[in-house]
Length: 62
Image 1 (cartoon, rainbow, N blue to C red):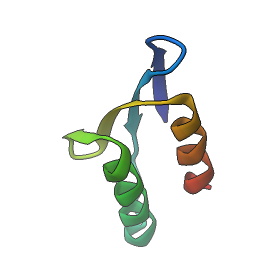
Image 2: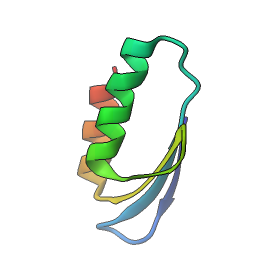
Image 3: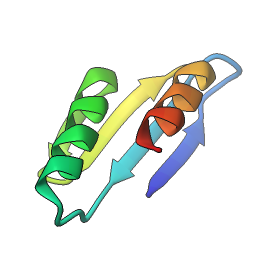
Image 4: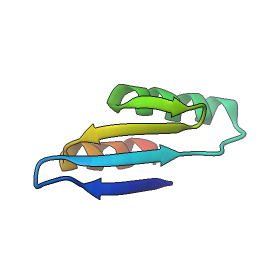
């Protein structure tokens, strides 16, 4: 799940949270999230990103 706040035309603030029991999938998601933002809790990440980066994250999650 992601919550998005658009700061302006070039930046957005997103919060990504997950509840994944499959370890392999969870580790994949963690690596993706760590490459774009920072962990604020065990299963919650925050990031300031560009809209194009958000689209990349969505594609990588699939």
